[in-house]
Amino acid sequence: RSRSRCMACGAHWAAGGEPTCAEPGHRDDHERFDVHVHRTAVTLPDGTGLTAVSFDDADPYARPDPPAYGLYLDRRWQPPWPHDHVDWPDFGVPGDPSALADRLRGVIDRARRGERVEVGCLGGHGRTGTALACLAVLGGHPADEAVAWVRDNYCTHAVETSEQEAFVRRIGERPPNT
Image 1: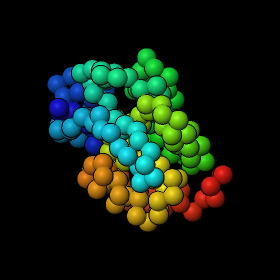
Image 2: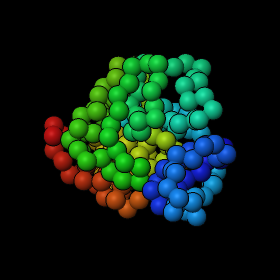
Image 3: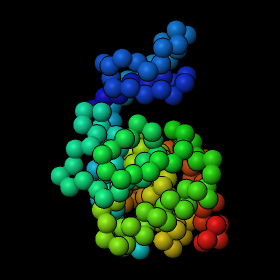
Image 4: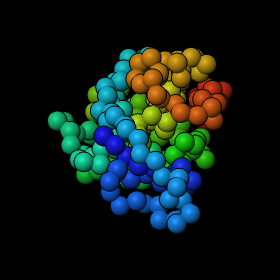
């Protein structure tokens, strides 16, 4: 699957489709890249299972078994099943870590009750990988090992920036109920 992005403003769109960046000065900053689609079952270190997903422009909501709930880290997601969004900029970290931790605890609770849940962003790497590492930490996994765990057990491309890595460590420093 190919996508295009504007390196100047960060906009993404399907390769060959209409660019979402229309800034005339940005045209030289557009590049094409290949991505893989995630519909990946992940078992967290504490045994909790969920699915990590990326947005597939061709058919984003195609699933053999749709989830009961989804937590999405990109507003492009508007699935027909119950879901929530977290305000989280691409390649960045969420502005409200406590709100994210609360939402992630809700994901863990649902999954532990046996609900089919998924977590996803656009590409399934930076935000999704960071959220998976945070879920591991919230489930008791050491924060300084969580990024390596996600890369070993989900995708080697997970957690894209040093800021995201530091965010995972900070989640581990917060008391459990904050």
